Length: 207
Image (cartoon, rainbow, N blue to C red):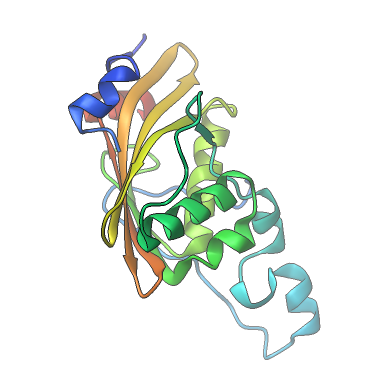
């Protein structure tokens, strides 16, 4: 079965719908916040297991990466405002695997919401949950899940990224536009909402 919807990349802008081992399954509508435990104040060994002050396991930090590529030719990157600059630097850090740098642009309780009924759908709260989200997308597609940044629009505290989302799962093919909105507050990203341009195709791909 092949689920392949959505026009070519040129239609992304016109439609305006255009925006690990540690991974956990996230059901639709669930709030998945990473669970933290305490070991009685031990610090030396804990720092070896976690990424310093972030409290995120070092192994997860080392593998965290948003499978996002730049459109070719790459779009102009000169940010038009402070909000776009924050989002742009966060995107660049995360897609290049610089997880700790990306965290500097996020509030600790940042959320990333995805609609739908598949294993990635729901509310992902905190940096670790977001890293797990993209690790799971890569693992479930045998590392074929890719998103491509087509355009970034700002001008205020809500910055919008227009993406092309692609992947393969057996004989299922995903090729749809997506929109991702970043809400910036106090100089850091506090809320991310990702909207697949074809929700039926998205749900069928992950079913």
